[in-house]
Image 1: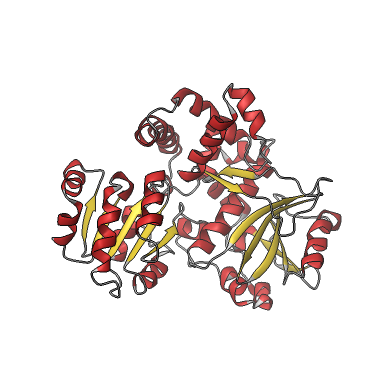
Image 2: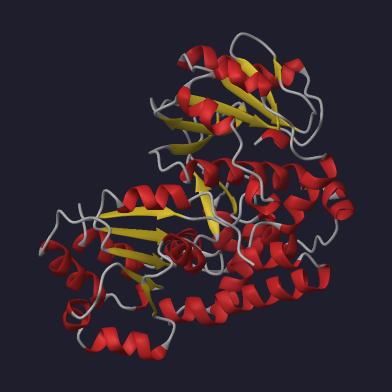
Amino acid sequence: MSIKREFLPSITSLLEDFPCVVVLGARQIGKSTLLKQTWPTATLFDLEKIQDLERIQEDPSFFLDQLKEPTLIDEAQLSPELFRALRVKIDQDRSRSGQFLLSGSSSPDLLRGVSESLAGRVAMVELGTFTWSECKKYQKSNFYDSLLSGSYENLLNLPVRYTPLELEQLCLSGGYPEVVLKQTPTFRLRWFENYVKTYIERDLLRLFPRIQSTTYRRFIRMLAASTGQFINASDFARSLDVSQPTIRHYFEIAEGTFFWRILPQYAQNPHKTMTKMPKGYICDSGLLCFMMNIHSTKTLTEHPQFGFIWESAVTEQLIKSLHSCIIPFKYYSYRTRDNSEIDLILEGPFGLIPIEIKSGSHTKSQQLQTLKKFVEKHNCPIGILINRDNKVIQLSEKIFQIPAGCI
C-alpha cells in the first residue's frame, strides 16, 4: 500500500512548465513510488537494474531516440553520461514540456550533470521522508497556506491534529515509508540497522570508492550525537584523527546524500556579534533515534537530548512541507556571541520569519525575548513559537504560539 505524497500536485505542475523534472532525495524515501504516481502509464527505467543501466550506457543518445515519451528514469545518478544526451534530446523540441521525470540520490556526478548539461531545461526538487501529515494520511495543514498567503489571522483557527503521545511516536518512527507502513518495533530496528549498513557499505563506496568506511561510520555517530547543536569541524577532525579537508569532505558527503541537513547561520548584514559555526541535524528523526539507541517514547522523552531531537524533527517537518509547495525559500539558524539563539529562520516570498521550537507545553515570556527582538529589528511579518501546547495563541501583535500538532 502506498501513500499519496503531498508533492504530487507540485510535480505535475512543474511538468507542465519544464521539459524535465528531477526529484532528489535520500535512498528509500519513496522517489520511485512518486514517479509512478505522477505518470502511472509511463515507461520506467530503473538504473539499479543492470539491464536498464547497460542499455543506457551503451549509447545514451540512441536510447533516448527510441523512447516513447513521457519517460521515467530512476536513480539517474548512476549514468552521468545520460545528462549530455538529455540536453540534445530536449533541445530538439525545447518548448515541449513534460518529456522526462528523473529521480536521483544525490551525488557529485548527478548535480554536476544537471547543472552543466540541463541548465534552464530542468526543475529540481528535494523530496524528504514522509511528513507527519502523510504518516497519518491527513491533508497538509492549512498552516502553510496561511504562512504563504500572509493570512496570519487564519492561524488562530488551526486545529491541533495530534496528541502529545502521537507526536512522540511520529518523532520516534520518523518518515521512511517502509518503517511507517509496517509500524512494528522489531521491523523498525532491523530496517534501520540494514539502512545504515547499506548506506555506508554499498551506496557510499559506489560513489566514493576511496572513503574509509570505518572512519565515516564513526563520523555519522558523532553527527547523531551533535544533532541540533552548532558544529565545530575542528573538534570532529581531532576526534576522528583526520585532516580538516577530510572532515569537510565528510560533511559534504553527509549533506549531499540527504543524511544530514546544515542550517547555515543567518547573517544578512554580517557583524562581529554573529557566530560562524553552522547548526545541523540528522534529516530523519526515526533514523536519529535509532542511532542514539532510543527505541521507545519513554526513552525518547527522558533522554537528555530530547530537546535537540524534538527541535530537529519539527524543523524538518517545516522544511519538507515547504519544499512540497515548490516555492523558493532559504532556512537558517541564528546565534550571537552572547548566546542569544533562534532555532530556525525562514526566508522566502513570505518574508523573514523567525521560529522558536520548544519541547515543553508552556514557554515563559523571558524565553521569547530574542524572538521578539529579532522580529522588531528585522521588521518581520510575524514570529512563531512552536511547542507542545494544545491551543493556538496570539502572544503579542506579531508573535504566535502554534502547537506542533498543527503543523
